[in-house]
Length: 209
Image (cartoon, rainbow, N blue to C red; front, side, top):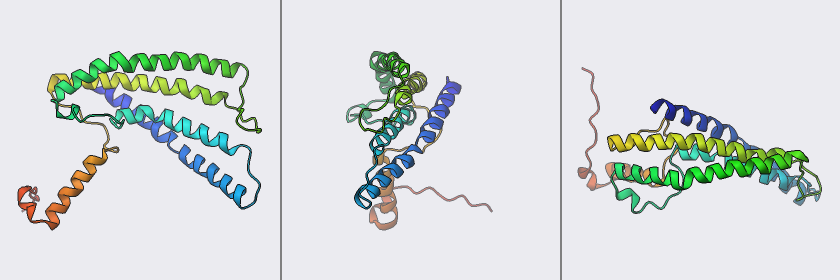
């Protein structure tokens, strides 16, 4: 199970970080449109199509990566008070009740949607540029498959946690909750600037004699 978790995390991270570069394409497209529209008075006919396709692709393809780093928004004001084993049990049930049916529906519906779009090489009706969008519809299937792969890894995480009463660590700590960052920052401020530093035990530095 652990080897599969590592594999799924790496796959999700590769696709998430690869498609993250689309933010540059989107930024360039929007910036160019603003320049030619308001400075040169000659707006483009394709900028809107490019912007929503880039943003949609980025949003969809980053879903599995965000899931692998436990970065999705959740209302955990009660969940966080529970023991890890209880948390894992709840998540395991919810994955099978909601996550997998939803992802499978996304893949099946997306396949039909994309196949129909490819059959007549669909173009955008949002602008007169007739920008091809049939390839954009295939992103729905790809995103669903990535979510399915990562969802299995999350189930394995739940099983491991139910055994050990401790969540397995992520492969990389490149995504963190803002609350955790603020908490560490607050602790550093206390250690350096406050008389409350006596309440926090600062780790001893290793000395090589």
